[in-house]
Length: 243
Image 1 (cartoon, rainbow, N blue to C red):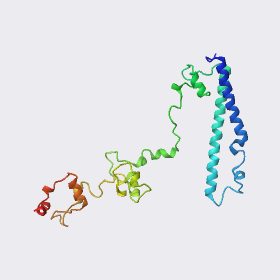
Image 2: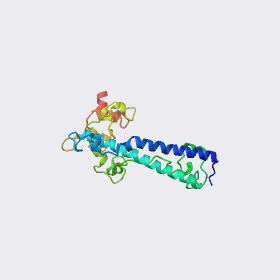
Image 3: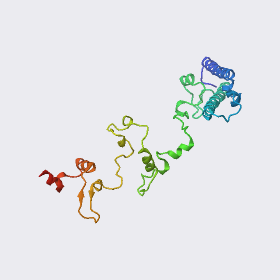
């Protein structure tokens, strides 16, 4: 026996029946979203192998969308039939999981529900992305191996960094950081050293025999010193220059 008052149950039944009639009327008037006719008849072309594949792709996209809309209506009609059957059996408004009465406010908002709020199976947004994208998760896919201690070879992230170095559609204004002023600073790990391990290796040089150590006072040297990694007082050439 339903826990709902007879008057309220009658209003809910009327709302469910009206919902069914609206769907059936919509399907009848739009010929089931135009799916009663073939795609060739809908486009008026003699063949689906068109000289303009872009046009055929657009029509196929809309066709797929119509199929999705039709499937949604068919599922909703199934839910309506189940709700009306539950009303006839006296089980309408009872949660299918816990067996407790569903609050009247929830039934008014969602007349076709079979679950209370706590046991609703759609508590979170469903994952509806293509299965192929699982290969890309996490970013750079399964070929991004930087998190492994033994990884020191070329991987997926390195491949992307090479591609990204040629430029992208982003600009410094679109960068995540608020201190990006150059396109070169936008790349992933843009400050990563290349061709050397320690920063000072980029400005320390010797002759061909490995003798006569010298300092190349370029931008790398100045950045190293200004960042506090080194001291100008320990640089003998800088001391002579100061004198």
